[in-house]
Amino acid sequence: MSYLIDGKEKHHCWLSLGSNHNALVNIEKANQYLSYFFEDIEYSSQMKTKPIGLDNPSEFINQIAYLTTTCSKEEIIECLKKIENLIGRANEDVENEIIKIDIDLLLFNDQILKEKDLERIYICTGIEEIKARMKKMKFVGIIPARYASIRFPAKPLAILGGKQVIQHVYEQASKVLNDVYVATDDQRIVDAVESFGGKVIMTAASHKSGTDRCFEAINKIDEDFDVIINIQGDEPFVDPSQLKTLIACFDDLDTQIATLVKPFNKDSAWDELCNPNIPKVVLDKNNFALYFSRSIIPYMRGEDEAEWLKKHTYFKHIGLYAYRLGVLKEITALPQSSLEIIESLEQLRWLENGYKIKVGTTNIETIGIDTPEDLKKAELFLEEMIKR
Image (cartoon, helix red, strand yellow):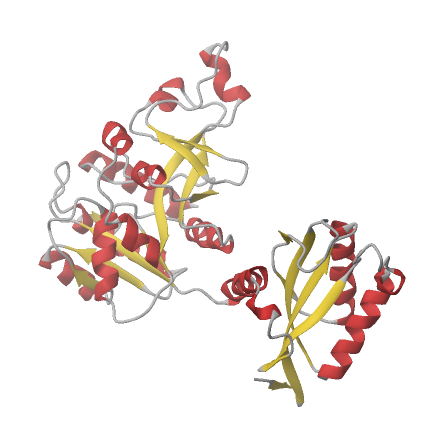
């Protein structure tokens, strides 16, 4: 299917690129030339493949590209041949089956030009990768809110600065998300949310975690969403930038679950780093979580405790989560794991079962309300915010 832009017909085109000689350099050159001749190109990841029908054993590097253009099919093919010749296709060593660059037009709108190629796994994978990236994901915020908290019963309804805590959370989340729901187990919270015009869903009182409550809630919403954001119902100052950072984690196609961390300050007290109520996180080089613990991780061998925070960046976990819908369904069906039970951290269940948790970084401190004393601190914090 084509469409019109500024009176000109715009065509959807899928290309395949391949090289088995100086491949990284030649694929990069092809990308540069394509970007010169065409605008708004999306590229897949590069993929290594074994040669098909060739005696030359050299591996290929392949890539898929998607573009839209007003050029005709014939003009596109002519342009691709020009790019191939610029990279040296005309002077290839045919006898030794050296292919400096091969660029094919696979699809022109709904017309299939290379039917057999479309059956190849790497081409299907590349097309699906680009389609997934181009798809605008729909996010929904769900705020689990229990009434019967042991340390602070009815805390979602506690008054903070003239509004109930749950209303503060809802309004902060709504600054970023078009769709926000409170998931509760008590009619009094339902009434409170409806009184300020919020959306609310009644859920079972038996849930052991906010994650489970989120899953029941999303199944009761008559709308499709790609990612569910679990927003703590007792954090009235959740910052819009934190939610945006969480959402940005899903730009990475490998992200199944996302959460946030905040670096400990270099001058933080040792007691804060040791505090078992502040879970710590270690990350890999791609910012996926390796482990969460109530203990200090990593342990710095051979260094005085006073030097730890000065010589290494330690991260505290911020309890915001987001899950792809299919992943949320899977993780809520998992039994508790041994590490989860030992540390009393449900995210360890997900790691133990092989799920990848992408971690975004925030420099904003969160203020949770777990006790009446926390509410007093929140009131002081709100007063300071108003003064600013």
